[in-house]
Image 1 (cartoon, rainbow, N blue to C red):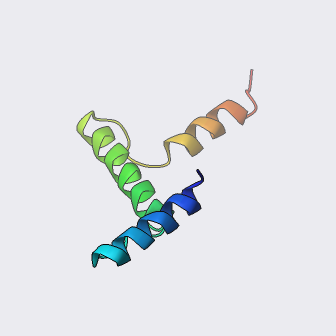
Image 2 (cartoon, one colour; image 1 turned 60 degrees about the vertical axis):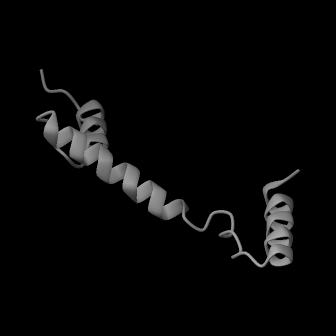
Length: 68
């Protein structure tokens, strides 16, 4: 059963029982990603590491031409 089919079944059941409909699939995805990003930044600060742009900094360090 796909996500869409499960959502439609849950919506139908909720309407039959007079309950509120469940949120659509993918509706809260951005909120979850933002929360994960904030948690990673917070844990980095607590651990004493820089909080942001760690991936960009690592890529720049790896891709920068080395001078002898």
